Image (spheres, one colour):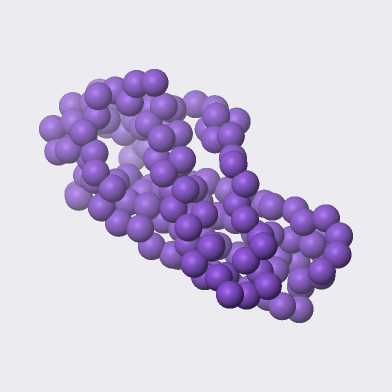
Length: 144
């Protein structure tokens, strides 16, 4: 898999939101996991962010665990201006690179979830393996 030979470094990880809602939790029944991904771009600092959002639900539309984690990736300055910036002043994150950033972010979220629920009954809820190839279907393009 190629990432366009783009130089980057993981420079930050933050828990954007975390909540346990006891009233929405039921001990029985099927658990649904709602997953979302988003990307952001900071042109001034050459940074791409990837947000992964998860909610565990037992009752429809009533999550009992909510987690959102954001990873920040600094792109090497020359690569940012020559490989990501396009002729029409848009910015391109290739599908392969977006998938790579998402996999790193989801893996981090898995650890955050474990750490935040360790020693509680909610520690049994794990983030399963997620096929990010089915979530990111094309390049990510930012137009300004």
